[in-house]
Amino acid sequence: MKLKFTLLAALVAAALPALAQVKVGVIYSASGPGAFVGISQKNTAQLLPKKIGGLTVDYVTYDDASDPTQSIQILKRLISEHKIDALIGPSLTPIGVAAVPTVAEAQIPAMMPSGSAAVVLPMDDKKKWVFKTTQNDDVICSAIVEHMSKAGIKTVGFIGYNDPYGENWAKVSAAQMEKAGIKVVASERYSRNDTSVTGQALKLLSTKPDAVLVAGVAAGAALPHVALVDAGYKGKIYQTHGAATPDFLKIGGKKVDGALMAASLMLVLPEISDKNPSKKVATEYIAAYEKLHASKPATFGANVYDAGLLLQKAIPEAAKKAKPGTAEFRAALRDALESTKELVATQGVYNMTPQDHSGFDNRGRVMMTLQDGHWKLAKD
Image 1 (cartoon, rainbow, N blue to C red):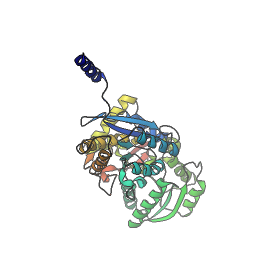
Image 2: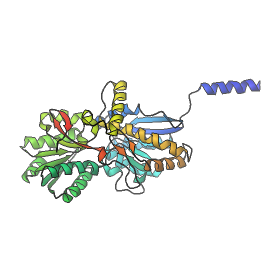
Image 3: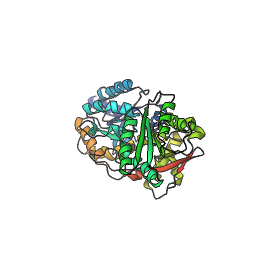
Image 4: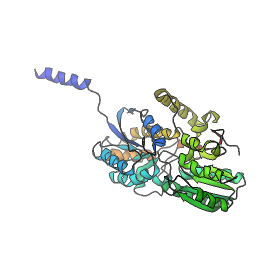
């Protein structure tokens, strides 16, 4: 009788689905004002690998509705209730910055698809637990400043968000422009909730800059651009990779034609050489996304997809040292992520170091311009 019971228990156990051996939390802003970023990230989460190195991976996903307070509450729940081994998210830079202390206290390695380098720089004991799946501002900015130099630009006006995204861009761009012999003649700020920046645009125009750099995101990046055009500005207007969204094109319309931007090669993929290793990975991602959702992904989604590629590389290494679900595994996973070398992803190649938790070099961006509503490779 005892043998029959044992056999029956074994058969029942075999019929049950395997329990997840690695748990990964995913927080995205699929609703609220950040939905233009989070929707493609939510959709991409469905493409993340369910098996890595023989281990089952369970993704626990939440929409934070673009709300910082709600996002931190979700993060704490993922840590305390779901016992996650790693985190992907949050989507937005201000929320990501706010999440750093909680991530560090729990010692959970986090891969943030946030735009600004503020989530990983300056590096310290808290930020050592955070990795960024997008290009750091200095990598994007270097392409912009190089283009400005070749175009003979000597003076620039800056306008950016009055939050970590805009402030970090102001700092990084000013340093790089000074080194290139370009003078910042005006520096203005605006809020993500502003509906008009006419006053700031007029102040910029009064300094007569050769070019203007806008550090905003999506429709918020179009707002100063349109204001400058409406005020009669005829110089070049540069945008950060935050403008790489359909909302920028929708709100800006014909007035943002001619915009110059450094961003992911995904936006101009047909023009990218087949020799570029990221083209194959990006093409595969876009095809998988289209098959599942019948639409093309925004580049923001690729940042979550790349987090999956980082996990595929790091989890097997961490599993050699500790068991998932333990503090030792989380620490080993952090170390493995930091040791990532020459990992080809959708938007470039990752080479992480203790000082650089983004890991992109110049292979992670291209310079482009907007022509008739479409991004094209920019000519020097």
